[in-house]
Length: 388
Image (cartoon, rainbow, N blue to C red):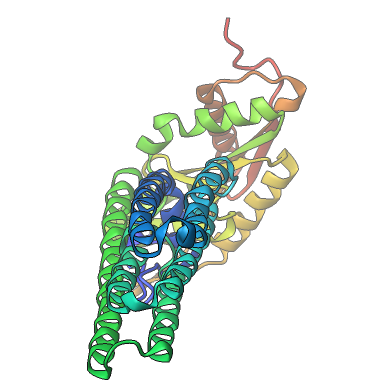
């Protein structure tokens, strides 16, 4: 089935959809959740980061702890500014990930200042770095590879600092190094698992949604989806911005005779072929193809003038007339008739969805009466379908 989300694969190591469009759709759908989780994570991390400044004062005294305190205070300031930026950004998820990267990088960097100011507490700092790595990888929403780079980079930098200072025994430094690396590995594995589970849940939801709004035979949208304000929404958008809107009603010629002669399986193959052709020749994520009835299909063309819609209908008509469908021992071929209607909402047109479909349907039957395998078109008058 075209546009079938069940076929979307998830990368094993990145924990993201391999299809860029699917990943973009996932992030768009989860934007509010990502922003909410980021706000909670940054708030809690900033709070704990400031609270632990007490240990700096106890270890260094107030005057000696001032550089560490200033470094710690930079973290909640960045969190506040970053969250305001993410909420107002046009691309909230991209902004949220940038804020998460900046916050975690600054948090790790400022902790290096704390560790450098308190070299005698190397083992305590090592425990903290391990915990911070897990928080960066699991608790703060971010792209997985970015989080791994930040957590592992900071961990390795601290390990290098601890070995350079060498205030602990070699045995303890080796143990601390292994624990920090284990924390990074554990956090990375858990983060990958969480990312995959989150996307698998989204994929399942998309499959269920697809089953409810798409025709299982052709992969086109079904009439239920059309009736659920699909066309109303396109008309409302075209009216709001003064855009053109066109509709194409298509019907296979002689379909009943093919069904009677070759059986319903042959008819299904023809319908599937025609539906796939319509989706291949229309604009992905812009135009909408609907299986309107048994062998009737409706194409909604936003921001398309009548001439452009007629040109598309002719391309579909010519391509389908030349198409041959193998069905067992038979090779099937037929044609289709098209009714095309265009509306210019910039001219103040006021139409109802029912009136628009009725005109397209009437034009399609005009094409059949005129000999089939042809296109009949009309520009809709501004007043047709106007409510009383």
